[in-house]
Length: 87
Image 1 (tube, rainbow, N blue to C red):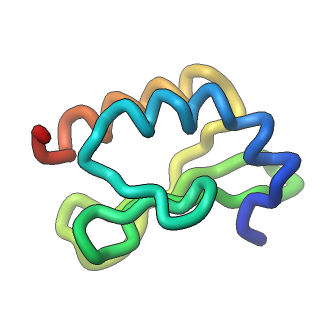
Image 2: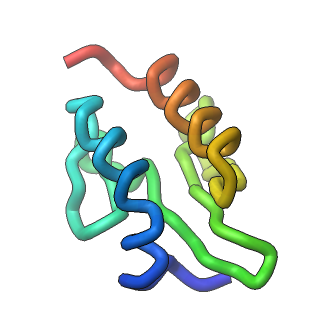
């Protein structure tokens, strides 16, 4: 599974804009977000669809969430809202 390229990130731009409003994350490069000094969220593309890798709740690994459809994108936003520190 490869990291999302420019065309895929263009498709995800509405989601990326919403993530940017959360404030706690820093976008080091387009679609690659850090929390403090640790990689926290990035995106992949695959024949099976689009995916977000988000840092696991215990902070040791990444969980993969499908974001091809709006329901998956909303699930990602809900998770971020619950887990990110308030800024």
